[in-house]
Every structure is written in structure tokens, then in C-alpha cells.
Image (cartoon, helix red, strand yellow):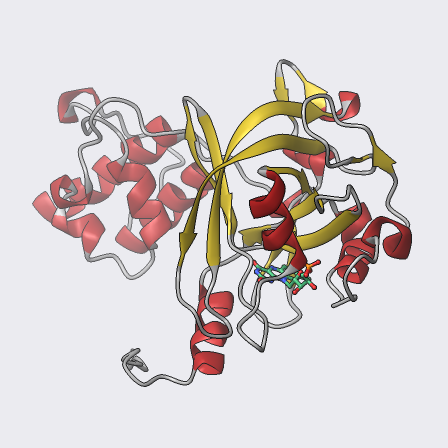
Length: 287
Ligand SMILES: Cc1cc2nc3c(=O)[nH]c(=O)nc-3n(C[C@H](O)[C@H](O)[C@H](O)COP(=O)(O)O)c2cc1C
């Protein structure tokens, strides 16, 4: 497939932003609650945000510069006070979160504008957001200036001092993604909701998977098996011993039929059965 390529030297910053925002996604959203030195509250969303280490727990977000190259209230407050609360945004919060992103003048409290409820935090001065299912009280560790013009960011690297998790999203000793129902940001006005059928499980590969390069040619050449199918087969540590492969009466006898049967077994989560069928498929070529 043909590809479009942009070299960034001389690239229009608006285009660069559109490429980054559209391609680096979906991004988590931090609703950053801060205070100015007088204690006046500020709240705004940031999706140039992620977690970067757990010992100590470290997160970072990047408020960009304003059109005149100045700093947004959130960066000014975080740098001035060294503190912020970063609250995750659930689907139920999306519309109010959007209100907080408006460019209000100095001193306007976006809690009041959005209707979100401030709650006292335990360790830092900025308020928690009562509606958020997951929040972090943070201390600014380091700021990294990423440029001086409009659109360039100030990366704020923060240490998490306290986590807060709403009781109903904590199940079986962990965060339940379906109940958290977080939203992620794509490019333009697009968002994604991460619950229900959007969620899928992908347990980590164990040990040393055999890898794609060890798959028999007959499987790699298949026009039916997809990259996801081959990835699942390749995540086994070793193919089954051919001596132990027993055909069953209902097994298809032709290559496409066997490959579709492999695919069905993988879709049902039965990789051993998929490999039994895959071995029968390989045997057809060897015969
Ligand atoms: C979902 C979402 C994500 C955003 N992410 C960022 C971001 O990562 N960096 C940024 O500078 N602005 C981001 N914005 C825009 C800011 O929220 C906006 O400029 C806001 O007015 C900043 O407020 P402040 O001046 O009170 O800090 C985002 C807006 C939305 C709706």
C-alpha cells in the first residue's frame, strides 16, 4: 500500500499537530486540577499525558503554549505551587470535561463552569474531582521546556503522592476497566469509550514465544490466516509434536477448510486446538 510521508523540517505546526493528535491515540485524558498561589482553583483537560514509571510512581503531561507563546493557567499554577491533582475522565464526565477546556480568563474556576464537584485532597492543596473514578495527587518533580513558540509544550513530570480509586471500580483487587469506562482522545473531535465490546483481553506472552519466523511456510503463506491469527500461533513456545497430532472425523480435509478451522479455534481462545489443526494443514503440504 502506498504511504504519504511528511518530513517535519518546515512542516506547518497545525499539520504537525493534526498528525500527532490523530496518529498518537487514543490518548488518556488527565483532568488537571491546580491552584494559583492565592489558592484560586483551575481545572483543564490534557491528553498529552501518560504514566512513565511505578517506583516511584511518575506521570507526565504537557500543557502547550498559548497562541501568544505564553503559558496556560495549568502550567503556571503547577510550576508556581509544585502541585496538581490529575483525574481520569470517564464517559459520564466527557461533556463536563469539554466545558473545562474552554479558554477562560485568569481566576475563573472551571469547577464552577463545568459543574464538577471539588473535594479536599489529602496531601496537596488542589481539589480532587468528586466525579472521577481514578485520581492522583501529584508533586511536580521536573519541568522540561519543549520549545518557545505557540503549540510547543512544557512537559510537567510529576511524582504521584496518593492514588484515589472510587470503591465501585475496584473489583478483585484491581481496577475494572469496564466499570472505569474511561474515554480516550483521538484527532479532531474524536474520542473513544473504553468499555463493553471495545474491551478485549490479551494476556502477555509467556516465556519465549517461538515467533513468526519459526512458523511453517504453509501457515505464513496463507491467504486466510491474518496477522492476528499468526501472532497467536507464534506466541506458543513450540509447535506441537507432530507424532501426537490426531486427525478427527469432523476435521476438514482441504487446506482452506483447515485454515478456517484454525481461525475459528483461535477466535474461541483455544490455541492448542488451533495448533492441532494447523499441524494437519502443514501435513497436507508435506504429503
Ligand atoms: C480532551 C482534551 C485534551 C486536551 N489536551 C491538551 C494537551 O495535552 N495540551 C494542551 O496544551 N492543551 C490541551 N487541551 C486544551 C486545554 O484543555 C485548553 O487549552 C485549556 O483552556 C487550558 O486551560 P488552562 O489555561 O486553564 O490551563 C485539551 C483539550 C481537550 C478537550
